[in-house]
Image (cartoon, rainbow, N blue to C red; front, side):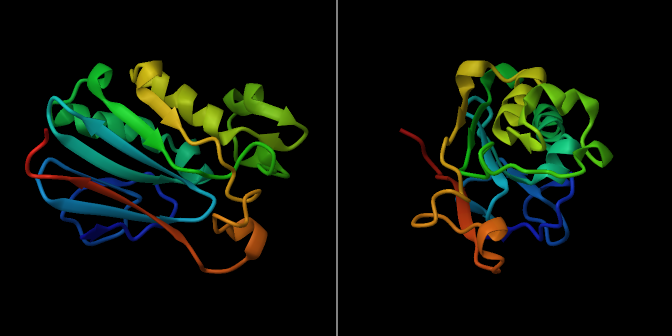
Length: 178
């Protein structure tokens, strides 16, 4: 089992890795990659041609730092082609609760089109836009519509609960695929 020591960075490393990173990737069979998260996104990247797998934690800081684009570059360096990569993103903070007061201090101007109302941003749409610009085909991107803040029966939310409880996303590549 390989776990990221997440610090809201843009660091993506090859597993096994024991250090600060918000993303891990591997081509090795029977390896588990895990990410803990609450309102942040976790994206699973899978290239069925090269058998490259990545699990990436992205909060707003990671998104501003373009961690998804950096992940695609890491996978390309290992032989993946963006048009072959499939990406699934976990339930995360929705635009309905994506409030960022003072956003002008830390969000780039390019995020303005994703502002759904004053101080509220659609981080899921920002993720989709970044992935498409990195070369991922729109049909290969699946983003869970659930908002972790809004759905308190199923999801932990740091913004809502202010607790250390987390969700865990696990990525696994078996030795053989059907």
